[in-house]
Length: 264
Ligand code: ADP
Ligand code: MG
Image 1 (spheres, rainbow, N blue to C red):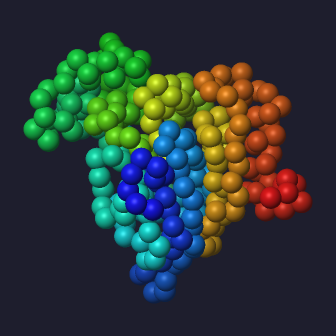
Image 2 (cartoon, helix red, strand yellow):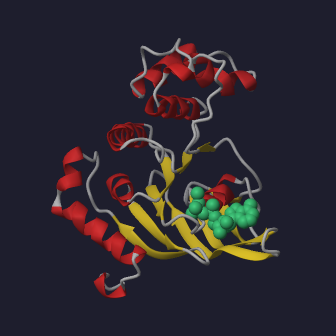
Image 3 (cartoon, helix red, strand yellow):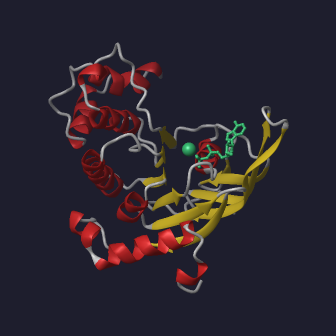
């Protein structure tokens, strides 16, 4: 497909990733023949157990890794490395401890010699509920607040696609729920495309339009689950029968219980 408005935001084509394992002295097939597309504005989760290749897949989309075979296209163009249209966020927020919250958020634009965008940074901090904290240092913040600073820092560069690798994995359940809500609001109001790695089934069902359920050794996409729940998503969704049904579908795939899955 030629580059253009009609191209998918992310198009993963027959991706296989093989690593050398220096410990065992052999090769590890981390991913095998992975293909999927993410459309502009979609929220897609990669859900699977530890070691199934989620981070590898996200790093390939981010352009941090070169595929062994296959390709990744972003808006119809082959990925050759990282790019400004893709913003990446990891489990550890990795803020600069010697910089105040505001300067952490402004670090990217300043490093690129762009003018100081304090008003914009303040607005983003407000959007993640940190309007009172711009002069605090990271060590004065809770884990959830740090991750919200990391999200504001990501958004100030205005990437169209957010690539997030278990960003809330280290947070307690209630903090996680709150920050998921911030992310859902941002996804909707800023019209971002999100590729979200998680091993948390509830998180995947609550946030996603589609869940790609993966299995390990070698990593592959076992099943795609479409979560046909309207947006904005409400907390009440978490306790509905529909939510439980989606969760059951995902669990059946993860447990390898083929009989419990609906027909493909
Ligand atoms: P996940 O994020 O789902 O936990 P990863 O993508 O981190 O899984 O890893 C998938 C598999 O690939 C694992 O078996 C892991 O040991 C292996 N792997 C990942 N990165 C490397 C690497 N740089 N070198 C060797 N093996 C790797
Ligand atoms: Mg990982």
